[in-house]
Image (cartoon, rainbow, N blue to C red; front, side):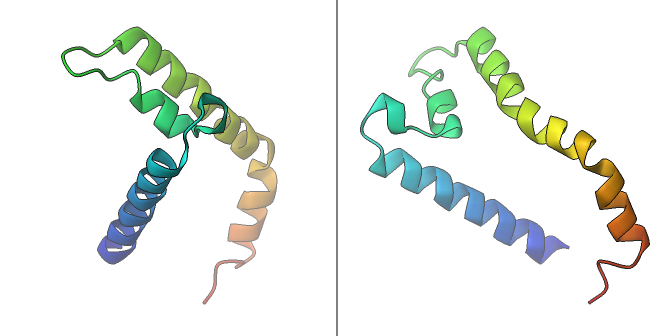
Length: 82
């Protein structure tokens, strides 16, 4: 579990780093890079940062709630056996 957590964190960090470096226009920025722009050198715009994070988290939450029945059925039927 620990190794999986470490690899997942490194993968997410690399994805953020590459998106930060290779996007030059505002329209091409990913959500995490756009949210990181609310953090300034001397201040953090907490209102916009929290609002953006909440809005960005809505699609995965809605999708997981819509497909919960299928996810639970797959897990209970042994779909995660190795």
